[in-house]
Image (tube, rainbow, N blue to C red; front, top):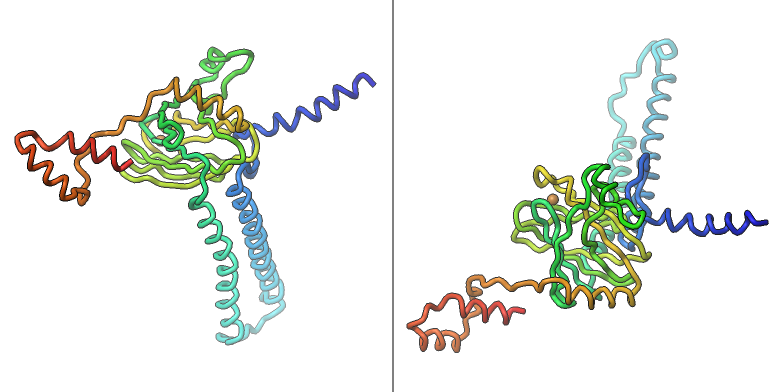
Length: 308
Ligand SMILES: [Cu+2]
C-alpha cells in the first residue's frame, strides 16, 4: 500500500517531465505541439503521410504485378500496344487531384500561420552574430540579450545551479517570458546576416533578414520551457545561439514584466535620416526659419518620435 502513493506520484510527475519540449536522443517525429499552428502542422503532416504511403504502396504493387504477370517466361510474345487514352487521362487527372487535395490545407495552414489580428503581446527577436536580443515594444519597450549558457558538457556541469544542469547548446542566460494562452505577435529581424528564429514546439521557423521585419505568431498552451535554435547558417558560431521561451501564467508574467521593465534597458530610437515624404509645409517653414542651423539631427529625432 505504501508503494501506491509513490507510484501515483510518479505517474503524476512523469508527464510533467515529458512536457519539457526539447530534442531528445533517438527521437522520431515532432516535439509535442504547444501552439495551434504546430497542432495544424502535425495534422497536415499526418495527412501527407497517408497520401505518400498510399502512393508508394500503389506504385510498388503495380511494379510487382508487372514483373510477375508480364515476365518473359509467362508472356513470351510482348504486346505492341503503345497508347491507351483511358490510362493516359487517368494518370494525368489523378495526380492533379492529389495535388489539389494537398494544396488546399497547405495554403490554409500558410495563411493561418502568417499572422494574428488579435495579439496580446508583441515580442521582437533580433538576430546577431551570434546571439539573439529581444524587445517588448508594447510592454515597456525594453530590450535584453540572450546568450548560450554552455557549449560543452564540462561547462554545463560548472554552470549547474540548484541541482539543475543547463541543457548543452540549448539553455540561454535570459529566457523570453510569455504568458500562456495569449496570442504573441513575433517580429523577427537581424542586424548583420540572415538568421532564423525556430521553435519546433510552436511550429515557428522564420528568417531574420537585415533591413526587413518578418511577422508570425504563436500561442503557447502549456506552461513550461521550450527550446529552439537559430536555423539559418549564419557563420562560425551558428550552432551557439539557442532560443529559450518560458511560458508562465498571466499573473507570473505580469510580475516578470514589472521586474523586466526596471531591470532592462529601454530600446533607443535611432536618429535616422528624415522620413521621405513626411515633410509637411510647417516643417518646411520651420527649416526655413532656422536656416542657419544644420537641419539634420533635430528633425530626424522629432520625426522618429512621431512615427512611434
Ligand atoms: Cu544565426
